[in-house]
Amino acid sequence: MGKFKAIFFDMDGVLYDSMPIHEYTWVHSFCAHGITFEPEQAYINEGRTGKGTINLVFNQQFGRNATEREISQIYGLKTVLMQARPAAPVMPNMQKLVSDLRKKNIDIFVVTGSKQPSLLQKLSRDYGFDRQHIVSGADVEHGKPDPEPYLIALNRSGLSVDECAVVENAPMGVQSAKAANLFTFAINTGKLEDHYLTDEHCDLIFHDTAELAEALLKSV
Ligand code: MG
Image 1 (tube, rainbow, N blue to C red):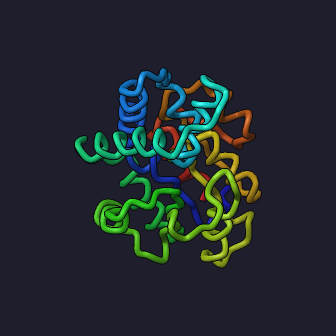
Image 2 (cartoon, rainbow, N blue to C red):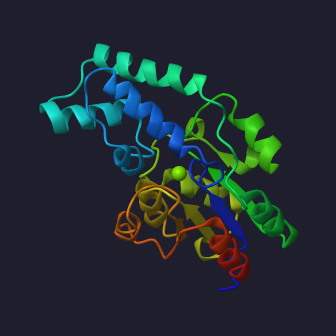
């Protein structure tokens, strides 16, 4: 350890405590259409597109893809419910961690599949990210679990793969980071058992952000 010069942070479930909102809105929008959706599935499928998640559930329960109308009804309701919820709070300890890392001259990027329009202002206001240090859903052709988002961050950092590490909470996020050959700190902030993250070969796993912060600061 003591070698990382840049850290790439995922956003949902890492920088913001936003996954309970996704869980709530997925469960209720499926339920309103008479379809069962277990809370755990929100965490297993984190990072998948809305359409991808809906089709997966339809295939599991009805053996077919959803129609465009079903997709727009379910996803439309999810969007309305999301807009009615208060904004997700920042994850405890993470603003201090990002600030402590910057004091050590560590370059910090956020790598998220999200495309929400308010993203840039929010990340700038809460965490001091400029546009150059944000890789969003708008910057990629292939989202997680493809390695592309993390490879873009690696390229922007100008560093070698061994000098960078990732912080991820989602199975598909860990898959993306490991496909890019990056050292990956997993932080299990959700409702899944650890094996969902270890099965994707994360290098270390933590269960709260204080533990993560202590280990990360020792690794730079
Ligand atoms: Mg995440």
